[in-house]
Length: 442
Image 1 (cartoon, rainbow, N blue to C red):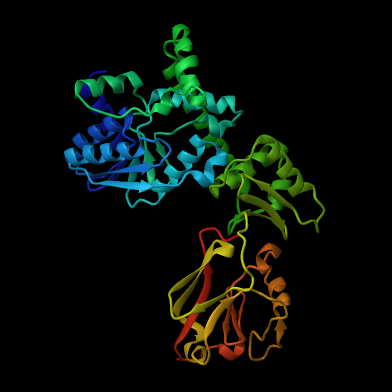
Image 2: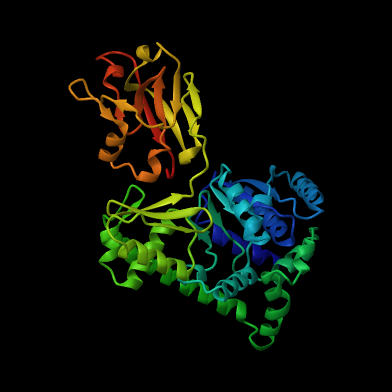
């Protein structure tokens, strides 16, 4: 493939996806693949009125990491492309393995960017390696689908070089006299991907020279099968998936393979890691087979739990440690973080809590201590917080972690549950609404 062909191929992949004015951010490691991608995008962006920038994620793993960042800065300056450099700390994730930890941190860095698309430099050799690695790990259809041209992440990830070989990328770099950096870890065959790249695939190429294309087609077949399985799971879920939970009855009504497919779909929709096959089997067995009053809790993925409550399956993040004695003052902020539930407490105008009455004493957020009581309406009796939480079907694992709004020593509000009658705003009186919000409250 000639140099111009590589540019035209990338343009054919991107043009149907990116409207004029779209913002595209290139992931730039400094290696030859990402340097070639950035060079191609720098030629295409003016033609299609795309706004191009780049991001370099500084992992700090290599002793040469600072030089890599400096190289990327020099490269982008020469191409007049804005560059952001984001430093990440891999230490807390080392237990997952260096490759997996670095990948997780890169994905998190991309997710924080404000752009329409993130362009990644994966190519046909990467796709073949990824498919083989997934199969060797015993992955299912979703894992074997490997990498799509366009992923559903936010912002969207696009891989315009996915049908180009590594050699074609090297030829392009040579034709344009491009410079790049070599990551010394790429030669370390102790990493599974490098073992495939340097030991297995050259041997495979001797007997099957077209393996890149054939494995790429296999990945596409797996992706189509995965799409069909997702369509089936969506039909099986029907109205069973609501509020981030899944109906237990929907699972119990299906055959084991179909129930596992629905459970995988439920986990994937919540961006949870996929459990191993034996974990998924145990998860399904406990959810569907435990007695009605059993407190089912299955941990997986290092930071996730699947729980069962009132006939529904809940997916929750592993709870963070918290100090139940903590008092958080509210001084008119629009929101306050509430880490114990991976959530935030928001305060908005126009609600049912009287602002004037809140000015009588200092206002604080606290945890439940036991013995709290509240009268939810003028005509209602005073109720214990325990009874109110049960009546509102608050899951047991959340009850001690809920934020309680106090004015002085009086309980004013349990967000999403009740407001004390004595603190309700009168008609026409200025008030606020206190709510608990998060993308995934657990």
